[in-house]
Length: 250
Image 1: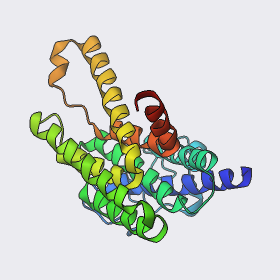
Image 2: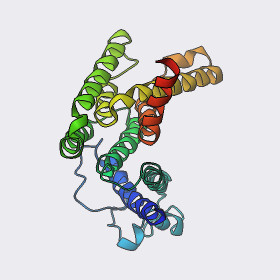
Image 3: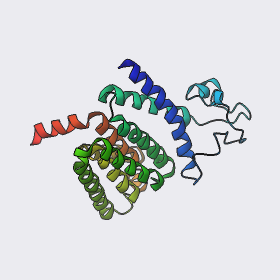
Image 4: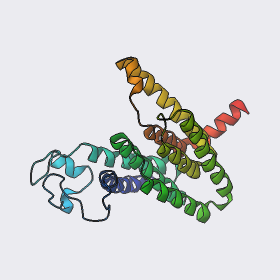
């Protein structure tokens, strides 16, 4: 298991490097395939030794080798976060076929959270492929769970749509679609994921108001990262949350 966890961490770091490209280019409508990685300041293509996840940024002290422009700390942080979460999923859930759904799902959650924080959008170009992949993996590997996944996805989408209609401006359609995608991957565990998302959002909202005053209520806070947090808890402990809820309330 230790070897699988380490391998997952290395894979996560590499995927995190790619997610940095996604986060930077998708909101700008640019291709994530070409051209290759380059310095945003001088447009110099990055050599392989300058594109090693986390390590290259540390060695270069957060600056471009050629022009000296600062490189955002978001790059190594995203790589390290992806590595840590990939390793955590393998450690908690085990190394089995379910990783075909779990690891791509985690990568999507990280990417859309970063984009939502920076740009306040949840791109369809990420959510739609994520939904298609989730359905494809379900048909291939979780066919007996497919009805539950479809109901959970549709139910989460509908519930969030109602919230968005009741509170226009407080919830966007991107959040509604992300909730539907989460349901497709988590099944009934989406209930716990949504509960955690709303609780976390409420705590942060109260903290912002307490710090900045009531005028801060008018400031928009992206909800995508809270949904992603709930979904990550669902991936790591979804079955346990359902069991706890059943034992406590049913």
